[in-house]
Image (cartoon, rainbow, N blue to C red; front, side):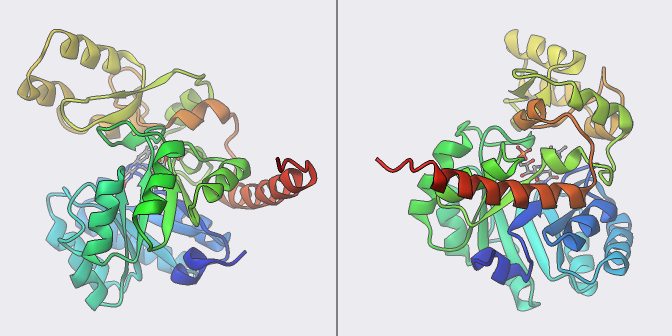
Length: 317
Ligand SMILES: Cc1cc2nc3c(=O)[nH]c(=O)nc-3n(C[C@H](O)[C@H](O)[C@H](O)COP(=O)(O)O)c2cc1C
């Protein structure tokens, strides 16, 4: 398999593990890269010096390309970017902010820049800002999400029509069939978050992983819409958010309710009651905790079987 995404990043398979707070440390990123995908370290939950340590450990654990995801609202962004540049990271995925801010500077240091969006409008802004590739993420996805609530099925073909640079699909993809569907819609790579959050190498707590394996259809929901829409498990914390939103709580009240460190409490420390439990809709399809290498290999194998299957079913009309 070779296409614009595999060539851009120098990888074997166009499969990327999303940079995820409290899940994507050096262990997960290096395991995905060693398996032939592109592993991302999630800087969003790391103090700058912790990020440096993860980058150094990732470099020691793989000689394959890997990258760092940086949510652009990160408070110590200058420090984070300095570390990325000085450690010689080759790939950066930015999210949650304006792609114009950092793209040029990173590219001047030879870094490939990809930006994450949830609409065609912002995909066009990415192309104008000169990014090398775009991740278009649909409303099924775990974590922070677009206000428009556009699903991956609807988003990808529209983004494909809007831009000509390489396109990576994200949101609700966790299988080879999902990857094939995304490719049929015009994507050239997939970024999977939830599937890789539920692996051996993910740094999420065992309690969080065990809960996610039990989730059924409808057990996650887009919440925190007044602050920053985020897909969460419907637990007690979500119930209190919902109650507050229903009585018309102000943004300030919502901010106070969310407080600090909620996602750490839920995902990393395993507090399933008071924690903010970010995970995607595809969790309802997942009931195992394999290694990241197994995921990459099985997604590729299933993709190939599905291609054969569709061809042999002679479903042309
Ligand atoms: C627990 C969790 C944490 C996430 N944290 C981030 C993050 O820090 N930065 C980011 O750009 N995306 C983040 N995401 C989104 C993923 O990178 C990815 O785009 C998304 O999970 C894809 O959809 P899926 O969950 O349906 O596979 C997170 C997702 C999850 C599940």
